[in-house]
Image (cartoon, rainbow, N blue to C red; front, side, top):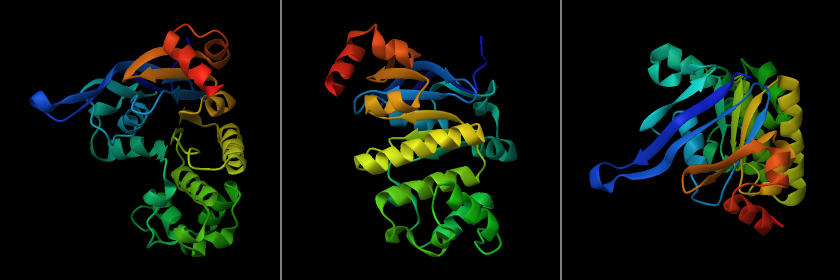
Amino acid sequence: MTPMKLAVENLTVAFGRGRRARTVLHGVSLGVAPGRTLGLVGESGSGKSTLAKAVVGINPVAAGRVTLDGRDLAGLTGRALTAVRRRIQLIPQDPYASLDPRMTVGRTIAEAVDPAGADAKAHAEEVTHWLETVALDGSAADRYPHEFSGGQRQRIAVARALAVRPEVIVADEITSALDASVQAEVLNLLAELRRDLDLTMVFISHDLAVVRHVSDEVAVLRHGELVERGPVGEVYGAPQRSYTRKLLAAAG
């Protein structure tokens, strides 16, 4: 069996305490092999984004564990935890909300390269490299987020994530707000980056057509539970669960 690059085992995420506690993920187990892309699908409220944020350490884990190369992230602290977390980067759904409007694009990327310095001039060569990697001109470094289109801002968010030099990318609904032509450009870019940089990826979307285009395997969530998982061709061609068939039928 191929070892998993990233895995969650019996992962449970809950918010609140006592009687007000609300469990959002219920013992989910899944993984993605090195250099592969796992698509995560489900209706709104199924727990997709909750899982993404748990993987990168934003949401607390009530039970279960997250592992990277078999190493439990829960047991790490201080510099060891920081180093591992830099190996897993989240690209959020709304790049405009995640980009500081007061910082130039160059400084934003420089901060990813060197959190202590965040000096765009000192890291100008690397900033230009990552902008060009996502098909933006190096001159974009001197501009601010509001000066770009939605598709360009999403590319900037990708560049910022890549500047950390991660091994795993978690892309959370990153094409949902883009029109069809820009969406295709971003998806093709991700496919190229995965191949060229040997990235492992978790791609989250409610759009089953998009997931099929970019993923090797797909996992289906419903009400915080994993209901089906397998190679894309098998799940799309012969879904075993009625919920999966319902999603595919709705997608047309």
